[in-house]
Image (cartoon, rainbow, N blue to C red; front, top):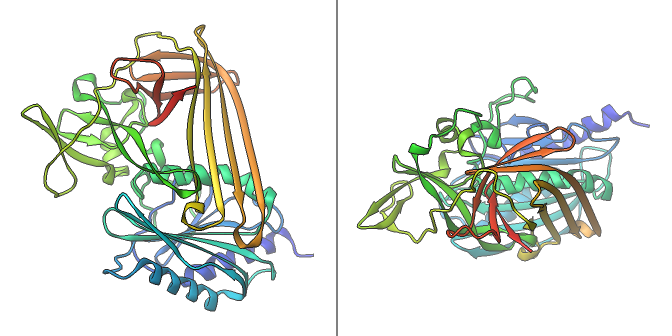
Length: 410
């Protein structure tokens, strides 16, 4: 029997073989999976959990964004799949044709392929392809390679879901810092990613620097990969710039670091004749109909009721066979206590494998509100500070934002 070490070596070889058949420039980490191993080769970055067991196989492969110069996305993806089928597959048992959709100016193409790799243990693998033409015109390809194992999916699905949602909320690459070239990064040299890159307690913006917290409606990925319109909060500064998110409490929000970590999340605003206008990059100024300013909480203000936030992912809306549903629920009591729960459910039929996975977690503790910050103290000793705002300008308590996500009272 092969040792666990050799089995992992073979899966790394599978990842490496796929990386050989990819190309482009300037790597960008995928979401916020900072505790996973990452390696850089040519123009591709791969990510792999560090606690895989036995012959388990699970990895994410992210190619650098490329300029297709007008080339059709489906044709480009088909060529990539042909390259994989020829270069790394011993045999292909199933392959779907690229499915495309265009909504809110965003082009997305997805496909899947079940195959047995030339390298490895002669075991089947599933490849899920997602090719997106970003708002800046560049196209980016992400591939997930995994063995069709229910326990494996159940273990890593919540992590991957968080990474995908972070990537989506960050507008693609904006949520993370650029990866360094070379091999696997050690924990000691990893740069901060996600909100950690621009969270500095006590060094955040002052009230005099903030024009207000406003919200706008944008396209987001929902369950099954469907694009939905969702309100999101943003931080407007008096210097004429605004941050397309509100995922860190203002007192912890390091503006200089955020401009470096998420440069594409920043744009300009101005007010002319009582009308708000925005400018994206070098595009012309445009009138906007933003909602706000959103009210903060009064010191020690209390909530009462059950609030829920729904999100998701997958590709069933694009003709694939994977659906991901994520709900974050929290019940607030007027005595200052809360109980939070998180549910992740998934159904997958990719590559002929029928899999349904559910993952649920419940926690509780006490909460306090002050301004645009909610502090959660869990019974296990953890303390979290979250960006907070009521969604209604009149301060109604039937909807609110926590770290940029909308929560509706049920």
